[in-house]
Image (cartoon, rainbow, N blue to C red; front, side, top):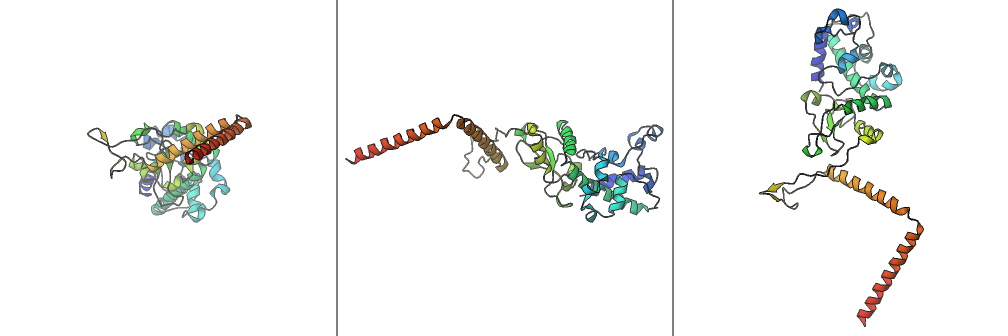
Length: 291
């Protein structure tokens, strides 16, 4: 699952001015055709370089201050190999240690994995959610492939929080189902870099971005006649769509019930009295029938 990222990292290694850790501050002139002399004074951080790579459009830029706080990285040292080297690599910390090309590639790969796991935590913070909201509004994550969702923007999601378990998927806030990303370069990203909670916490934080449940369902037809639902290949709306519709109906019913409850106790008393009268009338009819 890291194969695509590793190949991109090898490109970075070949384009850097040297293969030592002291060359971790990247100059982008070689990769984008800009003038080296102009960019040499600016310098591009590893984080900026990484998120700008083709295929990493789903990532946002994690604040360096967040990464420098050890509390935010709790437990990652036991998961990522060469943790200290990888962390220094991400933060562009220079070191005088000479490393072989093979060691350099190992550290670069570890840096990518570490950044991905940090990213999964960062996007659950208020600042990270704001960054992802901006990308969502720009449709950077793509659109739902379901035709009847009418191009609804989607969110990245993982099926597991454990690295190397599942690749990244996309979650549609309209039909509330997950799909494979449109581009293979996104499908190769580890799903743990986004986690299982992100899209749902995102929509809880920004409820105005929640799409209404779909009202259209595809109906199979033969010669224009709809196939009955009891048939083997009859119309069966996906479970996720039924759940979304049921949730919408429950919310509407609750809203209607709350509005009815504001009418006061008098309405309740009248309802009870009407119910008693109806029961008495029914009992009278039964006695008359018995006679």
